[in-house]
Length: 251
Ligand SMILES: Nc1nc2c(ncn2[C@@H]2O[C@H](COP(=O)(O)OP(=O)(O)OP(=O)(O)O)[C@@H](O)[C@H]2O)c(=O)[nH]1
Picture 1 (spheres, rainbow, N blue to C red):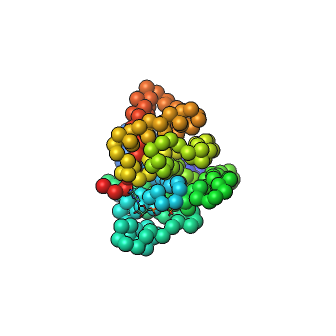
Picture 2: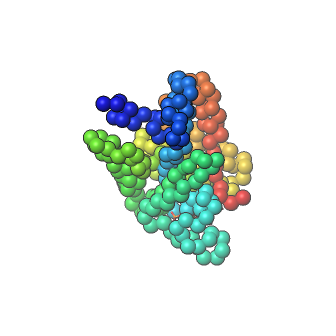
Picture 3: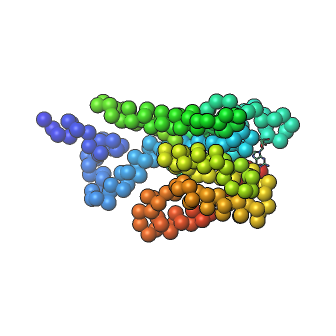
């Protein structure tokens, strides 16, 4: 049997004119061609990136999501136009496909209800951690199937943006408790919420205190040390670590 018929070669997916045998079109095939093949495949498939926003109620999570997409996503009112922004009462995700120079990104943002708003905040992190773990489990279950899908939909949370209330003091015990659990499960990026309510000096001092709190409580936020694979990574990641700071969605 003709082996070309049995297993489809990379050549077979290329458009070919009826007169040119497909393999001749490829020219030289060497190891460096792998890069091009990966690029073509990545461009075709696109990338998926899932962010989750977590924090106390009213810190601007939904506003950040609206700002990120430059649109109203699921709330029907515009902040600042009189009607208050409705409270987020359950976990809700929204997906947008963004395309830049032919590169497609499927960006999903999951908004969460105000965290730690109750009088008794015992185990208030459970629904959030439960959701994150459920997505890992779902992906794993798909991945271990003997006949698995060619493309497994990825709903795993790649990054969790944690909104720190702009108290100007330090992390609250609740933030510490939650962050200690969260950083074991997902990449965490802490941000100072409504940072425009602090002066630049207050923000700097607060940022340094937060960084100190994170170190003393062994909270390993993104980029973790394990990402420092070589000197270049180390330089870049140290820059990111130094810059980590406040966020405000109003300019
Ligand atoms: N000063 C200031 N206000 C902000 C900022 N971001 C949002 N706000 C305002 O804060 C209020 C609450 O914003 P939301 O985005 O609804 O807050 P949330 O964290 O999603 O709140 P929940 O849905 O209750 O969890 C709104 O009136 C926003 O206009 C900010 O960066 N600075």
